[in-house]
Every structure is written in C-alpha cells, then in structure tokens.
Image 1: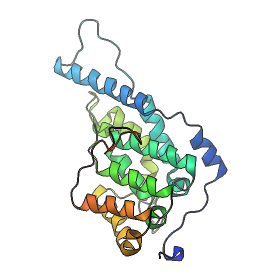
Image 2: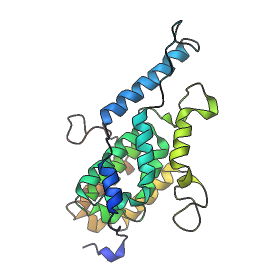
Image 3: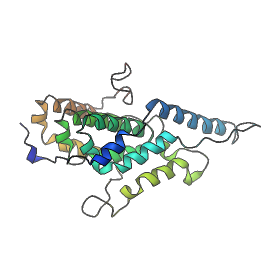
Image 4: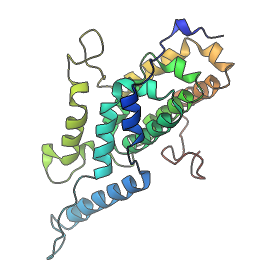
Amino acid sequence: MVEEQEYGRPRRPSPETVSYLSGLPLDENLAAQQAKEYVAYFQQKKSNGGNNGDDEEEAPEYPPMLSATHAALSSIFREVASLACEELPSQQVETLVRICCRYSLVAKRIVLASLSSYWVFLSTHRFGSHVAQTILRCVVAECEVNLDDFDDGQGEQCEGKLVIEDSYGSLLQEGEGIGDGGAAVSDSLSTLLVQSIEELKEFATELAEHVCGSHVLRTSLCILAGVEFVEAFAHPGSNQQG
C-alpha cells in the first residue's frame, strides 16, 4: 500500500481560488468555434496572396475563450494539484486543460509542471486521478493547431505568441522557479513528461493494485508504448472519446 508520507500531498486550495475557478464560464465548443474561425481567416488570406477580397473583412481577434483560459491556467498554476482534489474544481481544471492543450504546446508544459511532485498522490485520489489522466492524454495528443506561433501575418509578434508571453511569461523566465532559483517550467515537453512518469514509476507496483492509480499507470504505459489516444480533447463521456 502506498504511504502518503512517501510522496507529495497538496494543501487544500484557497477558497478564493475555488470561487474564482468555479465562476469561469468555460465553453469548449465556443473555444473550438472561435479558433476555427480565426485560423480559417488567415489561411484564406494567405491563399489569396495576402488579402481576402475587395471587401476585406476585419481580421478576427485572437480567440477570446483561449485568451481567458490561458490567463486562468496561469493564475491557478500553483494550486492546480490542490484543485484537482476537489470535485467541482477538478472538473473545471480538466476543461481548462482540454481547451489550452488543444491549441498550445506551451500550455502542455505548464500543466505537466503544475503537478510536479504530486503525481502519485493525485493518481490515488478519486478526483485527482481523472485530472492526471486528462493531462497525460492531452499533452501527448497532437494540437489541432498550435496557435503559439501561428502565422497571422505579424511575424515574430504574432498574436498567439504575445498571448502566451503575457499569460505564462513569469513561469517561463529563469529565476522565477518554484525551487533552486530555476525556471518553474522546463523548456522541454519531453523532459517534463518523462519526469512525470518517473514519479509514477517509483510506485508502479502499488499503483497497479490501486482502483484509481491503476488507470493512471495504464495511461502512462500506453504513452511509453506509443499508443495514440483518439479524440483526447473530447468531452468526458462523449462518444468521440477513446
């Protein structure tokens, strides 16, 4: 049996953060629609040689739902593990993860780093284990489109890059880390993923026998085996999830 003192256990989340997260009007369908329209506009413009016709419509703004979710993920970064242990907040966290990771490689690094040292505890928690599985599935799934550096005609100052820098800049800068004076979030997605699975590996035998932990362990083993997760960004319980 896994002993709690052998691995990190998050504190209870602050009531203010729970209230903030619960009040967010997260909408995955709206996020997908906004992203689709945003991408389609610039792809059409590019195919037309830099314009969208004589009556060129005004360029759409960066998807507002994505801007909001990136800002939210940044603000709860240090309490993600805590929120994952609460029934309703954990569901909001999963929604944030699905929206952000669907369109951002940087967001994938953020969510992995947010659970650092807490993977084993969350894997054995009835709510946290669902969050852990969602994060693992989403970080290895291919982005529908990576808007972090999407070509919107602005070059190095593309809107997606500016949104990411504004949301996560302090977490990515050296010297702003959780410990040892380093960056809180590694610049390598693969390194963060391996570190996460290494945490689970140490308790693999115990997790294999745990009603919740076994599911997270299975997900990590599927990742190592190169199994592709079909529709990783689908809503829970939908017939698209697999």
